[in-house]
Length: 342
Image (cartoon, rainbow, N blue to C red):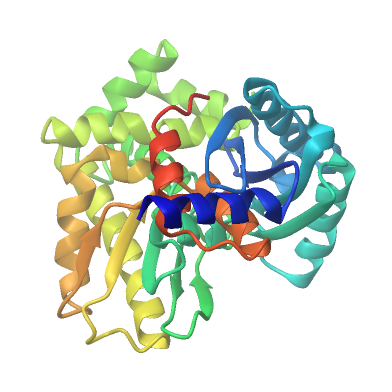
């Protein structure tokens, strides 16, 4: 066994020089990891959003570059040693987006080879290691994606906060503000969200939240952050807040079932992986999500993702080198993953 491991290690060391990088460029933050071809992660970095729709092309490229530079510094290796860099970007929803995204990636000047994919793909590979399964993400926005038995990848949702992204933190924050103002009008039930908004923003009256939203104006991240207040109210038993989470859970379940149908997984007991900050709210989201999912998927298993999406990008970089995430490589990845810090 030891001899076989040594042979594997020598083979990996001969396969390439330099290091690989994975990047997850989201709507809220950009994170990067760098590591060796043997699966050992050496460093990580964090920077602001790399969603060019929100911050522009140059700022998006700067965020990616900053995150990777920080990861390389932590690893003690200069960026000129980077071989393959896989970058998952949010909001890559059309052919035009991929043209612009390609410009963003090339502006970074990182690595000898730069590969751009949708952020749903890196989330999938981080959660499933490329095995069949479905990921549902509820971060700032939302999407679901799945890998079929033949390795085909599809996704649903994630069409941006103006026309879609229900189930994500931005939508929850917006619904929380709306519920508080409608209660003020007498159009809906009273809710503790109103008091939490007044306290957080030090408002003289709840109506002043309109000034915060429209005249400052509030950013996508700031509205998304209000989802924490909605979760706080829900955990305290507020019915309006709980109903918001039940609604968003239903939306997420529909995303999952749409992927399940298209991949022929409805009756195959698929593995479902929940990612994104909204699911950190706990039972106020997970309980209604399971309940809603049972209406369309008779059998399923909720699994913990193997790794976060940024490591999925690194796994794709390994695959580009012809290196499978198994055996020694997987063990090295697991051992070094716990030491990451952003």
